[in-house]
Image (cartoon, rainbow over all chains, first blue to last red; front, side, top):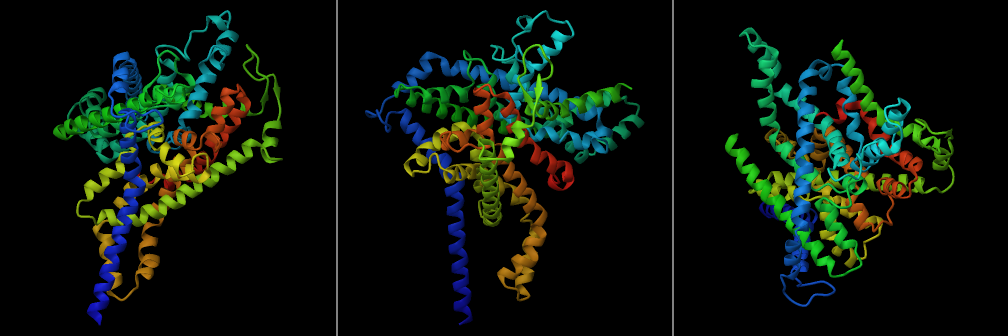
Length: 292
Length: 253
């Protein structure tokens, strides 16, 4: 009887375990895998309102027009510039304000910008840096510019100044806190004392010990943040240039047009972007593992 | 001296968005080149608390979604994370949990939109809730991996060896141990939902007007005063919570 009960409970556990794993697959993996397969099928003409059998026409159109490559190049430029600026600033802040970040006011204040989502940051940058924004008004009141026309185009511009600024501002607090946590975990303070005892200056310690350690440890997070900016949607939609859409905006534009023939192209762009990100991740993580 | 000046500049820059949006939210007409709005009024705030304003509904909708997503993903994440932690090919399972984060939320929304259209959940609150779970639930599973250490599993086994039932072990051993992590996970999954825009816009078809959707709507309508108020409503609750208990909520980051 005892053996039977034990078997039953094992069976039930195994059964419930199977259901839990199925639930996990259903909620986490199935939407992405299903969506990717559906998108691929749609872009190859295998499904959808105007499908007429297998075709590479939509992929050819997307690739031949060069619009995807342009958009991808622009997104890479934005993401690379923003993450570089944010990393440099965060490194400076985490090293220069080490004491204040440990116990001072900054240890609390730096968490506050984390409560600003992308859509709000886009709106903030727009209100600050548009021609009639706060910065332009302050510049006018200080007689730095004669009128709003003389204020430079910092929003909706081709160079993506507004997008870069918004993403840099969002990334700086996160990266500063990350570097600060790594600084503590890696015992860099003790290492600094040791290097000072051995005659190294603060600059030497920062350049040859602190910065390389912080960058190396934070590399996976920096890569993931880079990918997050690469797929950004809200900020470029609010303050980006109409002529140079980032990839997510381009994909959505294809879906929102009245021409139904644009939808397979939208799916082709989405699938291509997903594959590009997966490729980038796998190559980068292999390289990171090799250097670890 | 330089360090102090830089600290003051940095602190001012951090507080600027809160101050700026507060001023705009009580403003009315802001013509160039005035640095401050011409008129100040509490009408926007009063509208929020009285009557059936769009912002009030947006706030309630965001709260319902945030709480729903946080409760479901924390609960399911806690239960399922144990199954994944004990799985033979744990890393392969975990890799699947990272999938949704590889994609931009809006690209993910485009991909899964068809499913929601077919099931009639597009444009519905339940559809948006399920859509947001695609992001929040795997996060919770990944988050709780650190909890299921060998020590915790041994404690669970010990409790059951001593005759405690599974429910008793859960209530008196596991839940007290996981209490702080459960709260952090609840807070962070709440924020995933609270800040979400792409999935909400596409699965909700613009009909499920949460606060983030409303910010966009007001910006497009050039209604900067309402957009500022909606932005403040998004930023203030987590900011206040952080201010009150930063160490507790973000412990472990």
